Length: 56
Image 1 (cartoon, rainbow, N blue to C red):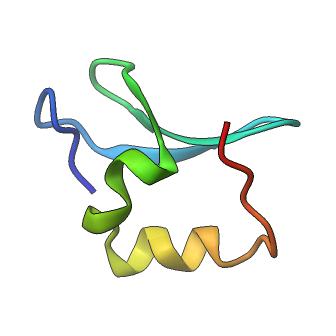
Image 2 (image 1 turned 45 degrees about the vertical axis):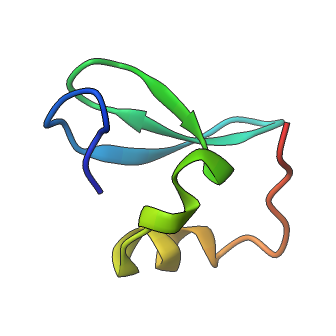
Image 3 (image 1 turned 90 degrees about the vertical axis):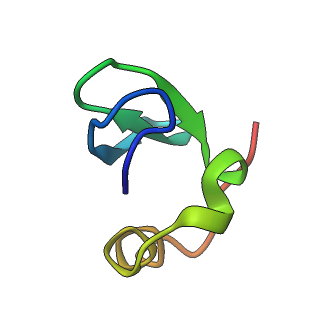
């Protein structure tokens, strides 16, 4: 996935209480629901490993 603010790559950033997508170039973090309509197959596969994603 590509960042909306720059051309950086978004990666899943998981912590003990949340899952976000973080740009490796500019560092901006997105909540899952902000980019849900743009998820690619690779990111969906990673997110499918958890049976529950909590939106905060």
